[in-house]
Length: 180
Image (cartoon, rainbow, N blue to C red; front, side, top):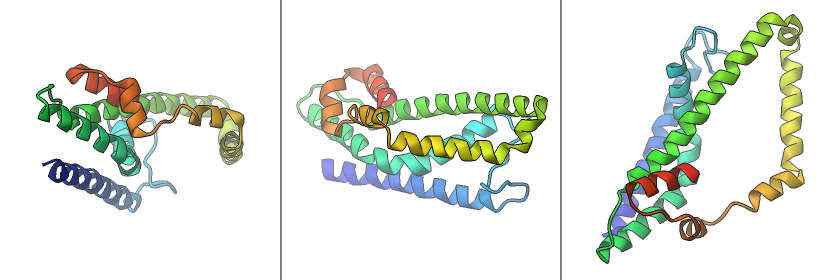
């Protein structure tokens, strides 16, 4: 039974990621898009921004979240076999999506702040590419920094995450998805 469930969950994750990638590629060729395929402006609503953010997140993160989601599903399937309670995998995934939506709202607010600063401080608009370049260099420095390795030391295998972060019930599964 678990093999069928595992394959169904895997097909849904990869299928959803494929649809998300298809949407992103399609949007990139719509009129009015910038070089990255995004429509960004003061008239972009938080709903539109976060919707696009979530499509991008699903495209990139669902395939990498797959092992954790499948491990969660397997543990709960084993618990159901032993009559220890059951929580559907979608509850865990919902927690994962909620945290990314919240980050999308924060990114939207930061975008509005950057656009406001750019409108009030003209040199920011003139130096936009250099500022972006500096940000990329800083991101590259982070990749080589001890901070990154300290953060990576907190990464765990799906099994380690399950054993160290297990929470019972629907609320627990939602919290585990959020923290993952």
